[in-house]
Figure (tube, rainbow, N blue to C red):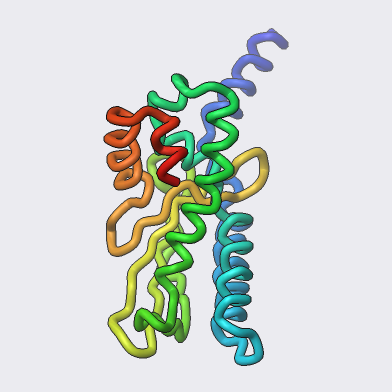
Length: 190
């Protein structure tokens, strides 16, 4: 009878969705966007230092290694361990740089505020944080973040700008490149 109760408790515990850390992941999003806003509103720091600080926040919040492996898809398994390591090092910089460059005031993006519109569980057991970036001089931008609890730490697993998934668009792009040039070709391009 004890074994039956233990088995039932184990089944209930493992069947429960991973929504238990909703509050901590919501706080993660709020704190991360707050830190970014502090940088945007800092009038004493030059643009280069701001980009560097934003890249640091981005790399800490986004699971770039997970996204990098997902972007390569089946080609990840064909890469040598050295290629995997080199690719991930380059991909971390590539992803941070390409995302942060979207917030360059010289390109018309002057962030006034980042507002969290909603935060809810998604189908994968993680969360979807819907935000809007209030832009001073151009139209506002909708940016959604897929947030997952990774070993007790909240991390972004996808960024969707105006509905376009970074993960899906880069997977298509990198898949085509890897199909034509292999992982070594992607590394040389990056």
